[in-house]
Image: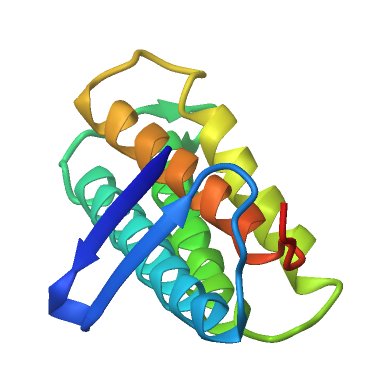
Length: 144
């Protein structure tokens, strides 16, 4: 089973075989570029969501604390972490990769914690693809 992912805007056409694929260094570089783009798209979604939450005009004060302000700060923090993940995912560090996987996995799980809407399904799909490609990018070359 093959997936053809055509990203002509980025000059990439990536063919992924879901089972037993051979990933050489050129393919790994392309996968890292795609991962960076996906992480940046995810960061953009969270940045826009944080801005909408912050400037929606709703005020929900609980014990003197504006909860929408806290939520928007958390969304901006998530976007910032995703931008950092996109920047450092190309490094061959044993610490960066698990942290990026953990960040994407937390985003994936937290998408199910409230009412599911169109935005949640978009983020779930984006995080699913990102997780699959993260693991594919770290696979060792095999012949079988």
